[in-house]
Structure formats: structure tokens, C-alpha cells
Amino acid sequence: MSPGTDWKEQIPDGEAAQLEELAEELRALQRKRARGRATPDRALHAKAQAGVEAQFEVLPDLPEPARVGLFAMPAKHRAYVRFSNGMGVRQSDRRPDVRGIAIKVLGVPGKKIIPGLEDATTQDFLLIGQAAQPFRDAAEFVWFVRTAVSPALLLPKLLVRYGPIGGAKLLRRLVAGIATRIASVATKPYYSALPIRFGAYSIHYALAPHATDEPGARPAKSPGYLGEELAARLARGPVVYDFSIQFYVDEARTPIEDASREWKESDAPFVTVARLTLPKQDMGSPRGRRIAAFIEKLSFDPWHALAELRPLGNMMRARNHAYRLSTMERGAAPEPDGTESFD
Image (tube, rainbow, N blue to C red; front, side, top):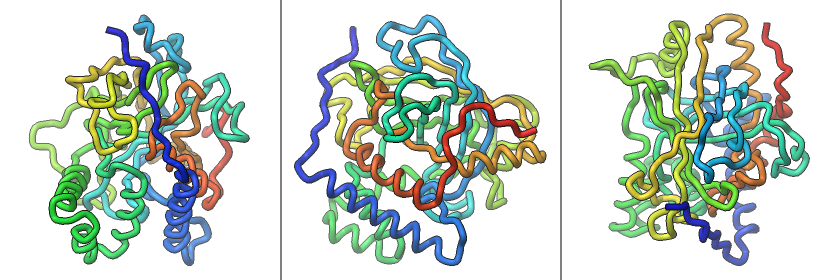
């Protein structure tokens, strides 16, 4: 059965102005947290667990609907990867948090979306550790970020805003997304959790790890244990993930605008289209530290993409405003071109 092509965005009147206001709210929080520091952190995903080199390999013999943009032909690309915690403040890896991974693929020809970066030869993919967002839209998300600044008031404000039933549902989604501590980022799946265009189609994408936790594996006690555990793994050998996509089926099962709805694998099976490999490397060496420092200065933006891979839906449209402001606020480095040397 061919993937559905009848997907569509539903953009209400006045949304652009609303999203610009929400993005300014996030930038105000970013500036508030940066007081006393020369360089602000990212508005969200402030703490990096690791920044490493990688290879992104587009696989051969893909089904016809999957041969779009970057995935049209088999190829091997250099890439930079940043693992992170989701909060806008740096906190221990032992604290509940969203876990994220951002991939910047190098050597990607074709026009990109962001004005001024149309001729850049990079393509970004951003993923988190949950298959759906806790929030239906950007307004819910920014309300939570604003309210979470005072954690003691979060629960009562949640109940006032959404009522007992709605508040309880949102709270369950929030807890499900951040409560589980993980032993390793190398054994965790990651998801776009939001749709992008894929030529005539729409998709979600995901990373499935090849590695699994050893029996009895538990989080370590160090506040930076996730980066430390990855460094130990990469000192022994490569870490590999399959990069897979899910095609839009219909609005009922694979909605475009409601970010809180998971695209279930039973409705939209995954198709593996690429492989992300973090080669064996010494993260603690001078070279490894230079790579991490370089990656930390980069921006990772879902809108830094080929036109055929344009982000979709309210939450993604909000990111178009918010990520740009955050990037400008901290003075992110220009897009890399693959000529970087760390030796």
C-alpha cells in the first residue's frame, strides 16, 4: 500500500504573531538564565552530554517512496552529533529530564530553507527520547516552560489551567517522558516526535540502537555519567543506530498538528533508510575535546533542512521562530562545510 499524500497543515489566523511572542518568551528566559555569563546557553537542551564525530550512511535499495532528498541515492556522509538533556539549565544527568540527540549531516547538496543558509551543505535532524510530545501545541509547551521556573507552583497551576482530568492527563504524559532514568544513551531509541515533509509524503523519523543494556545495568552516580558512559563505550568500539522513517497514514492515526499523539508502529511501520555510526574515538583526548567544543558552538535546527524535508505542524512552526532567536542570542558558529580539522 502506498503512503498517504493527503496530509495537510492547519494554520489558524494570527498564528505567526503568536509564535513570535512565544519565541520571545523563551529568549527572555534564556537571557535571564545567562545573567553574569559572557555567553548564554541554549534556551533548551542547555547541557551537552557529548559532542562526537559520526558517519551517516544512506542505505541502498530503498523503496521508491523513501528515495527523497538526502535519501535519493546511497551515500556516506560525515556528521556531527550532540547528545543533550532537555532543560534550559545545566543539571545532573541523574535528574529527570528529556534526553535528546541532534545530528548535523555534512555534504548535502540542494537548497535549504533558512534565509541566508540556502547554499549550506548541511542537513539537521533533531530527536528526543519519546515518540510523542507531552504537549499538543507550542502554547502548552511554552506555558509549561514558564511555569516550571517555580516547580512548587507547577501542580496547582496545572490543575487550574487544565482542570483535574486534563491536568492529570498532561501530568502523566510529562512524567512518562522524563521519569525513567537511563543507563546509556547508546542503548536508547530516539524519535523526531514531530512530522516533516518527505517529498509528496509526510513522515516521523527515529533512531533505533544496535546496542542493548547489559543485565542489571543502572544509572551511575556521577552527575555527568551519561557522557562518561558513552566515552567508555567509544573507547572500546563504535556505537550504531538505524535511522528509520514512518509514513503518514491518515489524520486520525498519524496527525500533523497534535504533537501529543504518537504515530504507532502498528499503524505506520518503520522503514530503515540510513545508519548512524559513531566510530571508535577518544572523547577525552585533546582532539576529542576540540571536536566537542566545536560542536557545542554549532546550531542544530530542524528548519535547517532541504525544502523536500520541511518541518510540519504547529510545534515545528514554533521552532522556526524559537530556534532562530536562541541561535542569534548565543552567537552560534557558522555552518560547517566539512573542511574542519581537529588534529
